[in-house]
Image (tube, rainbow, N blue to C red; front, side, top):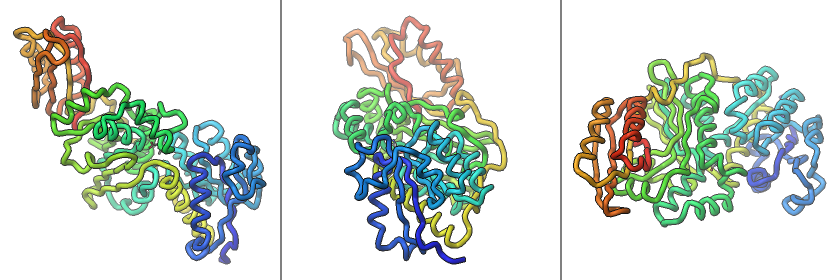
Length: 431
Ligand code: HSE
């Protein structure tokens, strides 16, 4: 088949990521034809208000406020959707596919809810649907899961998959920066979502976990299936205590296939300082994958930001252009071929760290320990400090062995009802 001289792109969105794509394609101008077989041209870019984006492009005439200028243009081969969100983005992507256009997206919100359907819709039409940038920014994760590791039964993925929260936790632990200040810098650096609640409450990471779990376990795992906790309730005391236990705190995405069910969750975790995950700092992300044939794989790199995310998107664009030129688009359909049940979080097994404030009087520690013993919660370590905040108070920090989350939660309910507990200050899982 003859190569296409020019492949034309319609870019939906010119925010942080869209502008990164614009710049990266310019940087690739000289080599793109040799790499892909075609010249790649951005024909139109959708923005909300042309006046706000005019200084970002060489030719303001390529900007439009009307998505149909892109979606209905028969000359446009690939639609790159980087506006985010699920409503308009879904309609745009659907229309692009119905109009025979390949889609490249960074939209994890959409892929984590409608990904399976959109991939099917694309492959039924012989179109490519690519979303490498939807998980862990510039780190190749989607391709390794779909291709390189396809010969494995994958049983576990652990990852730091949110750059914003990793940046915040690193700055708080290493530079004593406040949470608010670190979040402000993460937003300025373009790591955070338009609404950073998504980052700090663990929603962004949960979307990425859903995407990875679906690909790894060939079962449709959606955002709603992923249990999630964020970092907003972590305090400087938690970070200090973690340090005293030889650990750092990371927001972890965890998904496992155990006994025919999928576990999928995001929560802060104490990670021992000598574990490789502990040295993943700032906006860097890392993903550990365990497969039966390959054993362990670790993928590491920049998980957020303009250019790392653009790197993944432009990689997807180049692959689609190569596929167009080799007449093999739409080859990779959905890899979901079964539906495994999702195990509720309280039925999982974990290790915990719990910090509480108690009155400094004889017998309190023994009361606490007996509640855990009664609920079959085995204790790993106990640290008690007297008079830390108030002279007549003690802080107790307990870590557990691997125990049933249901039993642990039950213990906490019983502890909260005791007169001898002033406050359960924090509960964090331990690696
Ligand atoms: N807000 C995301 C993060 C961007 O901080 O990781 C990359 O998906």
